[in-house]
Image 1: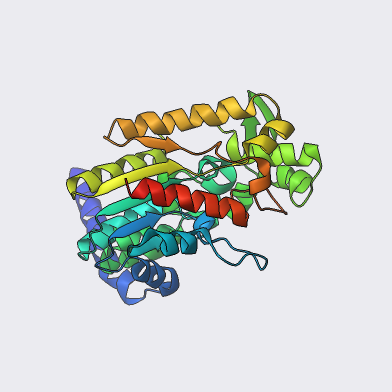
Image 2: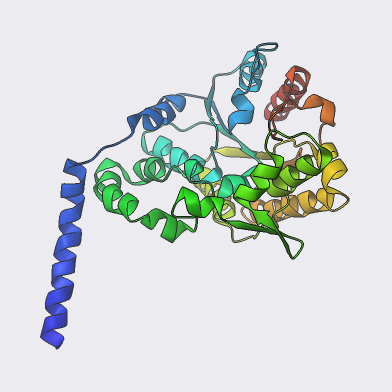
Length: 318
């Protein structure tokens, strides 16, 4: 029996060893996001911004994004790793890759979006970037060698703790204040592209009202970013993205603002434990400074973008 088990383990080890070269040879990488991240962080950039779609958002009426306003006013070379659904885990992977390549900025400015911790963004499959993060962290041979079986059996989801399929995501049940408010599918059906107070209240609750666990994987990623910057001699500034707390409080009720504040406090304590002071701009702007239609988010109108850019430029120059 013991000999049989040893042979079994030896066979499994051989398969695992072969998987990497074989998987790499039959790889089907998605180079578009990988190349985009690589180009976003060139060597020699003095300052690196890490954010999401808030940085790049613009409209036809006001086509100047927050990022462009910062670049125009900062008087320094600024690189930015930003895009829809970008999260601390992806930023950590991008920073690891950048430092490995010798792209060591003097200053990193990290934007933390409270919406990224709500189930709609946190659990959505399109926001995980599993292959991209693996390539940035571990290189192509290991990441792409393991990518096919990991993706085929949804092992990334099992390990990291998000749904294994879109159907499972849509059927994810959401609870607030100890009671069920429906599945993701049901909540979106009752709130997406609807502007009644009830619909908007559901949306704001889904996006911003999940209690944040200090052990959340994205909180751990923030802590790792702080440690990596400190060990690399990089100054790190971290801030919480402004959100429309006025509309949230108006449609969800009096519990909205305290929950946002409580979640920010979790972030503050986590980063303070790693030597970084968190700046909280979650309540910086009234509703009139935000620009969204179909669904609440943190995108700002032109005036709001200008004000936030001025805040960031002054903050970065201290």
